[in-house]
Length: 91
Image (tube, rainbow, N blue to C red; front, side, top):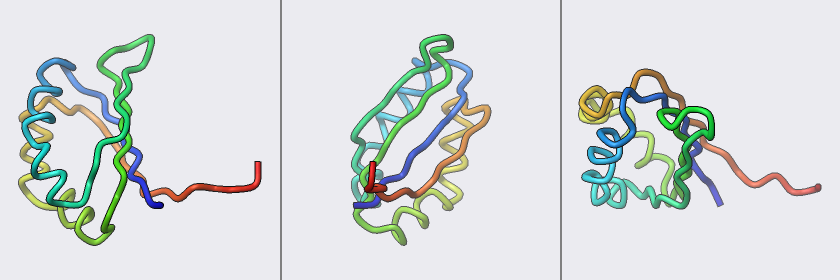
């Protein structure tokens, strides 16, 4: 199963969460199902979240679209990154 692991630094978590939550249908339409959302213990504006990815191509198109960059600016994202990951067996 493929996941998308994201890290974002935001200017205000409550503002970011409001914008992020308003895009739930768009996330689902892009094959992104939110599984976890965390805040750093020492900085609540440093967030990490994990999506299950149903279709990497649709997910990449969604996060590369101009609307995604606009939503990031509107929500107060200061910095961030994302990675598509698979489970690593063997431990």
